[in-house]
Image 1: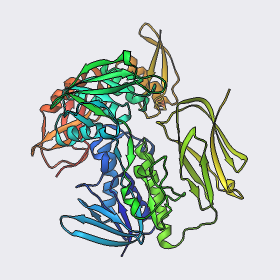
Image 2: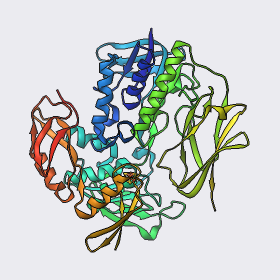
Image 3: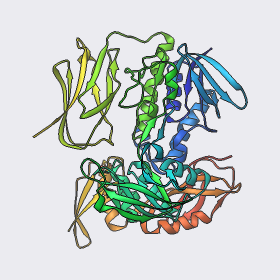
Length: 412
Length: 114
Ligand code: SF4
């Protein structure tokens, strides 16, 4: 019997482990699929991490190192190269590695911290042939930064999310020619600073409202057809343009890697593809918590760590039997606000809501109603889907209400 | 003359407007914090960037490195060439100096390798 099993040793898992330990749970085991702690941060060698948490700019490996060091100092056991196969409703974790074979651990609580994966070519429906030379941006990042292989010389990137932008710069620095970054939407989903330092610094064109409609080539990619899209995101025939290239990188969104949850019947949000959780990141499966990108995709690792802390603390009080459930408040959104995490509140205390909007809106108010009463109204000049927003709800706002609704209202 | 810049000093990415008279900076507007002003001034006079990349180790594997301080923006490609010729001796800890001097900065390891 182990008090707490944490699945995933990336930023969410490490932070959850440290937080649970510091809140009194010492019997913890981290299971990690890779050969070292750190998760995706290990290949994110660029800087820009940790400004919230550490008040300085760190690279991904440095950020990971701070947490891995702390995990080591606390003596929290970690099993590396270990793949979790299944978790059951009664909180048995079935895992495998080459040393222990297949083994089973009975846990009192489980924290899911498996992260996310990239949306791949198959899910994108691009026409044309199926040559080599098409990679997700994250795969290319791993090849370049961890293995030292260059995926190609002449590059087109589809999708202007941060990974795509970061890889445009990375490939350029290593001598490749990035010919264009195409973005389906009329705005980039990446950070403004990355548009500047990854594209503009190197004169890489950003083609907004453009997509890749066909791949060309036999064994290897020889080019792609790109096109402008109309308002309903359909390619416009007259704008078809051939761009020769040997490599196409896809940076088209991330999806929580949540397959393990199917075994325990936790409710999944169709919007986030992550579990539905309460303020402690407790899922609807008793004793199972979730945090980080497996819960919802974050843009800043600092928020992932923060969420790990919340889940670690929540799991600790659950294990110690000190968790309180004195209310049941549903949190609803209006569609302009796409989702919020948590989705419900079961204990009256100060709670920070994290939420994302569904489009770019200017001059808006984020209004939060407790049943029908306006509790909070916050003015925002601009909100965008790529930026997670937060709002703090005070404990005393939670008395005598059954629902909190988040609404985005445009100011005239 | 007015110049619009995107501040890259933090993820907020404020649009900062610099008013120039010839080469002289008259005003900086739009920055949310003092770092934005600092950035805008440097960006107009002598832009700098931190370079993050990898370096080959004695066993053929890679270790992540960065310039400890930002270096002149127009020296990035040359810095890359020099870093790519360098071979680092194992073992390496986070913060180890891999290159003593490169365009006014050192190059340090950002990951560890046994
Ligand atoms: S001005 Fe300040 S707040 Fe705005 S991007 Fe620059 S550092 Fe960040």
